[in-house]
Image (cartoon, rainbow, N blue to C red; front, side, top):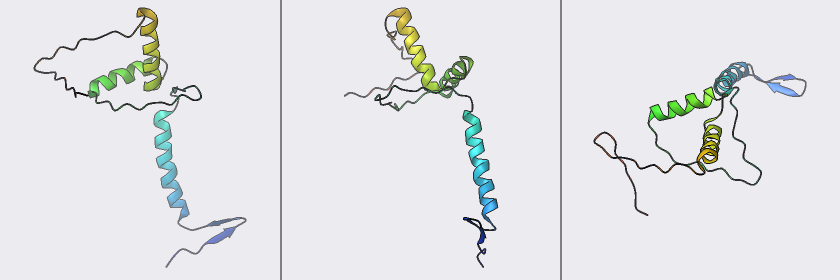
Amino acid sequence: MAAKPQRRGNLTTHRTAGALTHRVNATMTDMVASNAGIKRNRLPAGVKGVNPDLVLRPSTVAAFKDAARASGHLSLSLYLELLRQQLEDEHGALPVLSPQIDDEKELHTTAA
């Protein structure tokens, strides 16, 4: 048998609504708490952000996230934007790297 709706002013509630609300609030609290206090990268009006498809080692991601947190709880995207700007200011451009391929590291490229 379905729960009978109860009328409270302009709101109609159900007896089981409290349980659902608690589960939703608990889930949302967990999601919010993990990003609390993070400074985000805000792009200027009209600039569209790009979400690149990257595959990184977990240790690389952890290193960047640790550095971003130590830099004042920055988001990863804001940290990378600021790092890029700092490297360009110091060296005039981003460094050009020449990866070395050995037995433990593989470089996969796709021809255009």
